[in-house]
Length: 279
Image (cartoon, helix red, strand yellow):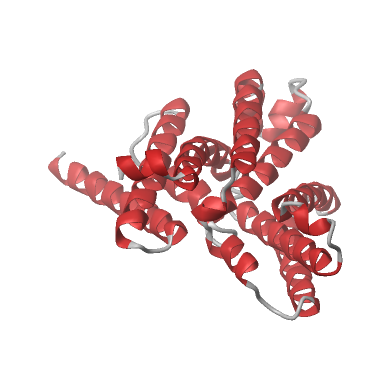
């Protein structure tokens, strides 16, 4: 495995991208779960899929567009979808949770329409659905690195504000925190992280990487910061372990990463139950 890493650039790209995504996906996932908006990742992933399908459709008729990475169109759709969710939350003030299924349904509908216009699935779209480490280039890795730096900077600088908004949004706004602006920035970060993460785990599985490590960590963590730490640890274990297993067993990396995340969750739940019985 080590020799292959030195030999093949696509493996280097996959592991470096995996390390970065293993940090930022669970990091933002903690705030999403605390806000009880875990399904937002599913909604934005389907919007991202619609963007990728649209890019592939345009590339079918434009030679120029074929040279543009479909992920960028996916990012644009994901960002637009995140802003749409925020607008819907304002419209349905007493039923804010409706914003997520409405956006998810719209994303699925757009994706199906674009797919039908493009005459169905192709190998490129299949890779985006379930992840493909071979498809990760140096340019893609640089995009992941830039987004990672931005996410870490924003979370570090706005940690206090994000913390208060996650637990008590109304009180935070009354206290003088610019809730709308910070929520706007946060939802855009989530959209971009989902768009870049799908190259490792795939559009249909990316939400699991943002929620399963968090679900495991909240069972054993004793504070919010510890929850973040455990979430990142479990995320890295799942991503790196999944890539290694996928390499040796010649299986899909995205599914392997998610299965490892689920196994980590089960192990944590069993550990917690055994610990409670002993006490």
